[in-house]
Every structure is written in structure tokens, then in C-alpha cells.
Length: 377
Image (cartoon, rainbow, N blue to C red):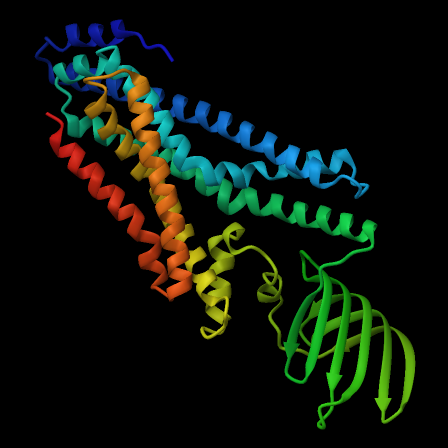
């Protein structure tokens, strides 16, 4: 990416005017220039990363679908629908590399030197970079909390359709008092397919089996449709067919719909709902709790990455090229990612505090960025 030093030099010439309004206007021009450079570089890097990862995901899905009679259009659609979640996940890395490219290029072209000579302190430049990161954070939140969930619903529908065409299903098993329930698929708007209910009697033996092609929710329980009902009494049994049947249950469908999903791909609202009603002694509670806190910290890590890129660009680019800044920042970003994974796994194994495990790597990077910032003259 090329930059135009003449813009900054023109601004410096104007700052000789003692008029306060003119100085403020010139500072706003510089702020806009820095902000646009960081945003443009970050989004270019984001598009490049998403394109690369989506391509490899498509190749992987294509290889895995051999012999499964999966339509190529379904694979393309699945890869496309995964873009919002992927963009959300790689946004911190895009912010880091993009900011390094923009600020490192400005440092190499001596534009930041001219800007600071015009009266902009390092703190003011940092404030502009941090304010710019809020736009990246907003874009990430829109993708992760609104666009990606809608895309995930479509992906689940395509996955269920593919499994049904192949004659395979991934059943979900749950227990409700003295009944065991299996569900072939859970769809949006409180719809379930292939519901099989096994009720036990007081002696612990199977007393009734209910199978419904589909089910929906009501205030009284689940409304089962196209039902086959079988009652067992000793060695005898009696079967009957009904069009619909109300099965009373107190299970929350919103919580039920989260069963079998990956916590890392759920929204803050869905994760908080699960943690509110789930049993803290459940085996997977720690995993959901960690996913919740990681989801909170993730947007903040974007701001942290831009802060880190500013300190690295001004610290490294004084003695090397833009490539040196990107290499140094990329290495720190890789360490940050590995540290996140290690701390997350340690948290699950040793039952650490989820909030601390999610925040600890960011605190270490924040300390490093603060230390580098103080060394900048």
C-alpha cells in the first residue's frame, strides 16, 4: 500500500497559522487520514484472510463429501454461509496486520514523523487508532451476533437435509423426569423432527413408547403430529395411531435448541441463556462458561490488537522496513493465539475460573503493548 507524504507536508505548512480553528481543522484532516488508512488496510487483510480460509474450507468439504452424493451447490452454499462466522473470528488478526501495514507504511514514508512534527503527540495518534478500532469492533459484533447466527441456521438445515438424504441422523438424547427423548433434528421456531419418547413406569420398566414425525411447542407442552403410540403391559402391548397429541413437558425449547451445538459458534444471548438455566455441576458447563467469557473478550481483543500494532510499528519501523513490523506483529499475534488456546485448555482440564482464563492472555499482551508505548519517544 502506498501513501502520499504531500498530504502531510501540506498540513504542516498550514499549521504555521496561529488561528486555533485552522489548527483544529488541520488536526481533523490528519485524524481522518490515519483512520482511513487503518480501516482500508484492515478490511483488505480481512477479505484476503477470509478468502484464503474459505477456499481451504471448501476444498476440505469437497474432499470429505466424496462418495456421499453431496451436491456441489450445497458445498458452495455451506462455505459461503460460513463466511460471517469466519470473518468474526479472524477480525482481531486482520486488525493487527492491517494496522501494522498502514502505520508501518506511514512510518517508513516518514508521514508519522511529519504528523507528529505538526503537533500531534503519540497519545493523540494512539487515540485516533483506538477510535478507529471501535468501527472494527462494531463490524465484528454485527457479524458475530446477528449475521452469523442466521447463516448457522441455514447451515444446520443443509446438514440435516444431507444426513436425511444419506439415511443417517445425529440424534439428540435428553431426559425429562421419567422419560427419555430422542430428537432427529431441531429446527428454528420451535420445530422438531423425528421425536421418540420412551416413558418408564414406577418399576423402571418401559411403559409407553411415543413416536412423532414432527413436533412443535405450545403453552401446554409439545404438540406431536402423526403419532404412533405403543403401551406396554407385561409381555403384551397395544399400538395406536393419532394425528396429533399433546405431551406435557416443562423443558425450555430455547435451551433445548442449544443441545448438540458448538458453544464457540453461539451468540452471547444464547450462551447466557444456557448458563442461566444449566446445572453448574454438568460436565460441559465449564466449556460453555469459557465460551461465554471468550465471546465477551473477543471484540475487546480487536482494540487491543490495534494498540499493539501502533506500538510495534513505531518501535520497529524506526530501524527496519514495513515487513519487519508485520513480521514482529504477526509473531506476537501467533503467540497470543497459542496462549489463548493453551490457557483455554488448562481452564477446562484444571477447572480454572472461566473469566480469568479468557482475560489472562489479553492482559499479558496489554502489558507488553503498554511497555512498548512508554519506550516510544
